[in-house]
Image (tube, rainbow, N blue to C red):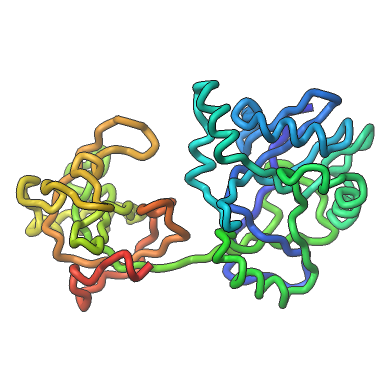
Length: 334
């Protein structure tokens, strides 16, 4: 019975040998429960999300055994087979009419990679290798194109090839699992190796640290578009408290009025309005104070991937780049 927390993975720098390997899909983690006509889809945080994917509910009814629990990933694919995470995010919408419209225009797929229960049998104590055999033998993944089985290999060399070759399709990396692994809800007992990239960005502003007006909370990053506009692309903010205060002192000579800042100008294609740079991605229209800086300093940051014209997640500091001309920090490097 739901809810069940999904088993999780810890990040590693290299693909470990001697395990089972699968692509790391870029979507929503989902635990699917079916009991007759009843289908329940639990998210990573165990909240029910089946109302957002009516096309998947129908596909799961036609594909899965009468009673089962599966672990997998919900994804949206473009016509060329690449994954489209922004389109998937848009599927979470409160309006029923919008849900129906998007279900038709951008149907989601469920990619299964584990079986937690089948009929009356709970499988959490069974080793992964046995669960995979049950998953392959009990389910008809040809009944509906919206339900599929993730590829798998036991060859670490093939996994390394997948890591490189599948990136163009939007696959985030590789997940490695021990063959004897039991299903342990909520525990990080798998291994994931993700693509990591770096980019040289212009530091165009900062947000003060909460509770300390003389410390930096995060640096606002920009990249120049082909038309020469400076677009807001994300932030970097993981610094020690001592370094936050040092950065505050270092950046004061660059502080400028917003009227003299690139984000005060009328933005061209791909650029963001100046107020957008001060709006939280996670809290809607909540306004966040930021201090504009003359775009003269360049910083190298580590990121996993882009979402549209912004970094998907908060970036990580690598180094300052005094050798780079800010004007050379464009989207072409990504």
